[in-house]
Length: 249
Image (cartoon, rainbow, N blue to C red; front, side, top):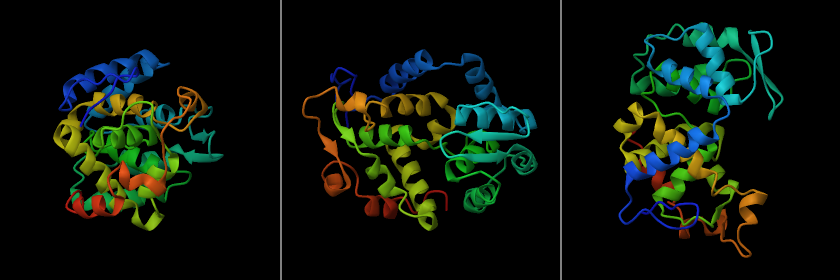
């Protein structure tokens, strides 16, 4: 595996997790638009129990929007409304001793909350467990796929590729396990539980592979990885799910 700088130069072979985490987490801090909120989120991860104000801050951080009434939060991209009070009643009651066998029912409980989809449910799980269970983000997933398969900067991973992993609502747990499996392979899952910089670094790195106009304009003839040639570049989703079945059982 290799990890690449934005100019295409790699850190070396084999993949050096420490250098990757250091460089791209620093870039995350540089790109962050609300350092105070980032500091608060770091503290919330370590608290023994979540408070209502923590729930509001976590959702505002994840959604990139602010609650106007402190009771609900509008998600601009999906036109949905999260009921912060309902989320707090469940998540604040957790004593953060969520066992691996409880992960799936806990997430399902969160998904049943008004306005909370799967990504936000995994976010709640992450903070309700003091970071024991990895947070999920589309850009972090793209960055992880690129690290796992040593895809050079300049290539574009189509959104359809990562959606191929999250193939249906009924199979989402297999895909979350596969995501955790790749995290373990690249960085060690235990380290991920205690180092927020890994998620920050992957989020930053993933933006280099996103299928947007800026990335497409970087090269006259960019390599675009689509589901039809996915197996030539990225882990086979079916095989990855099989290998990951022991995670979060």
